Length: 129
Image (cartoon, rainbow, N blue to C red; front, side):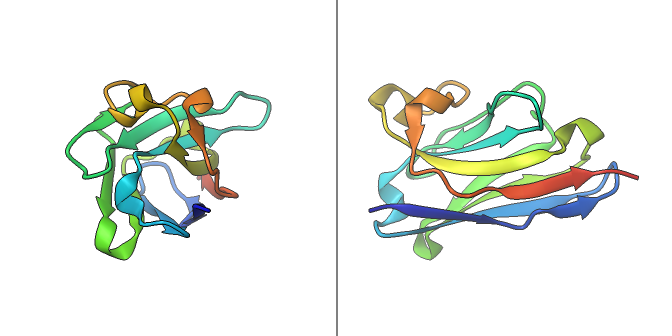
């Protein structure tokens, strides 16, 4: 069974940077398109970015495009989310998950919650001065 664990969150000032990691176990990560999501208190979970199984395709939400970069190292069974120019509105719990539908696996659209499974427990990102 695929298991995912997020790490790398923390407190950062506006304009700062963080790199989140999504580490996989159970199955080789190169089978899976991976998505990053976030959920702020009182709000729905939203898709942030996805990366295809071999890293050839990526997609970003408009709110993070140009600031966040998703990447993967399948040899290390890890997907990363490099976050730069962070804003207070980026504050949320960040989750990674694996695509469970063929259309989402193509990574041609912003990831949708209903198309993903094997959710990690999340890592808190707080952007505040």
